[in-house]
Length: 401
Image 1: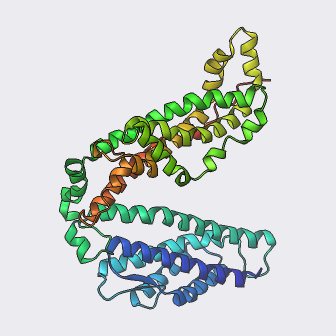
Image 2: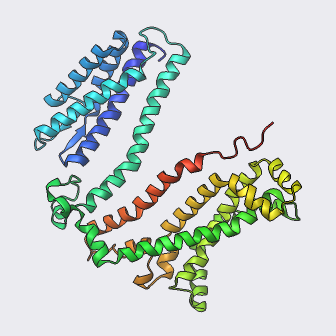
């Protein structure tokens, strides 16, 4: 295998299979036309292209020739991607061009150090790693994007389109604002504005309550010395490891007897029970990593322990606090079991509980998908917006030698 004339064709064949499957799936979702990969032809043409790239040592001319051959083969119906007779000419040309360009541009970096003769271990492993890296990017991107794409496209359809072809995920741009009819009906007919506000209110309140308990608790475990400290530190996550379904019935009975069922305050009381342990675990690890010299200097300057926490520890812990807050917010925003079990009044539904109410044969499926989009996009935007604060190390330079 550690010969260029073997490694090149093998990696070329495998890479062609990966790209032909990817492009065929993408074209089928985007156009609704039948595109499918041909594994045998993909292996054959990919092996030929990979071998040619190795012996010709790449180059722009070789890339252009490889892309042209792939595109012509696809359009002729003997290539790595086949199309049905009902597929439009424009879609076939676009699909052939997409496969040809992506393969021609990506195969050269994968085979960059491959020569026709014997390969060193470094050259061989480098090519394999580059292939696996590309495959990993495509695979995990597809896992994330395909369900989201299906969800969004379904939410933009009307009932007649779904009944005609449920597997057609293309959309008619000519419908204009009518594409968003499902979203308008969710807010005007299904009270989704109230669901959004309820979820936001409960999630924010859960974050504040969690931090109010987790910060002093985590600091005590990380900095103070007391009897049972080690046992407490090790048992923080025990309650988080207990499946919520085990506690569902006792919680339902207790809340029904105390009148907390079907109320905001009952939800706000029970959510922090699931989030405080993980917040304690995350924060106590971060507090231990902070330089103790800074806090000791504050104590020597006359600050009390609480003042040290407020003025020194918390400002240095902003990345950890942002991470914990976002994580807790996501848990509360996405929680379904407790909301489904404890809330009966539609005026008090959280977003997940409201979406569950759309899962009915009497409600069009596009409304359910639109509700899922509404629940997903805000938390996705929040995560992307706060990601840089989560990774930023504010402790750098806090102690100077």
